[in-house]
Every structure is written in C-alpha cells, then in structure tokens.
Length: 163
Image 1: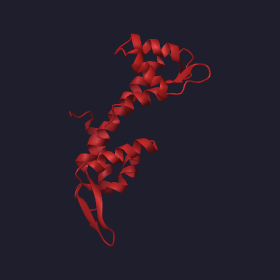
Image 2: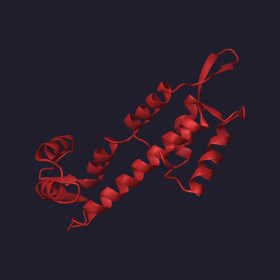
Image 3: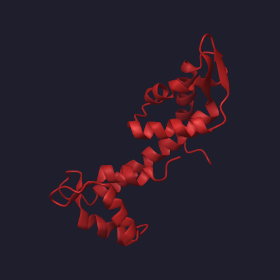
Image 4: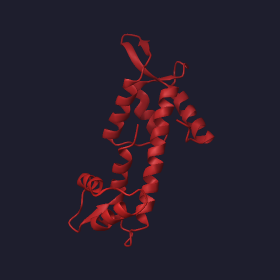
C-alpha cells in the first residue's frame, strides 16, 4: 500500500509511539495501543477499537517477557503505523463523504431526507444499486420526519472498507 501520510504525520506517529516504547526496540505493549491512538488524536468507538485490536492480535507479534507476568504481546512500529494509516484514511474518507452530503443539506442541520439520499446515491457519482442503498438505509436510523443523519451514514460507508 502506498503511503497516504505526510512526512509530518509519520514523524508525529513515530514520536508518540516512541514515548510508549520503553524497551527502545520499536515495539509497544498491545494493551497500550488504545492510549497511543488517543494520544495521536484518534478517538474510536468501542466497537471500532475492538476491530483494531483484533486486527493487531492476528498479526505475527513478538512477545516480551515481563517479570512475574509471563509473556506479554507487543506491536511493532511497522504494524502499528499500517493500522494508523488505515484509520487516518478512513477518517479522511468519512470527512469527504460528510462534506459531499453537506452540499445537499438545505437546512444545515446535518440531516437529509431518506428519499433525497436514495436519489443521490443511485444517480450521482459512484452509483449504487437500489439493493445497496436499501441495505445501507437499514443500518442507519431514519427519524420520524424521514431524515437521516449523514455523519452517521458516512461512518457506516467508511467502516465497510477499513482494515
């Protein structure tokens, strides 16, 4: 995967990671990953964080012996930065999607009529099929006025492509 991160972002990730790399071997404890992500300004919902942790657990991970605690799983900088890059890309994509929907938000309230949304998704850009739109609308709450919170919809759209 070609890097989507700027040199400044890469430096920041390395600097924060290094703060948690107590043994200075380019690894951090798996249990520290949530704190490191928050330190980078990446705040995930519990479900998203669980997916990230499961992804990291699947990777080949060296283990550090820790006094009186046995073997403790660690994450290499390479694995961590790959996950962070994926998350940053997802966050950027989510922002782009929100901004695109915002152009159709006449009232500026963060909501679109489900009917309008269906028309947008089936007729513009990367057109979706009726079935795809229906499946997506089933996942998002439609309020009593027939409106959808497009920020939540953007999160659903991007979560289908992460990691």
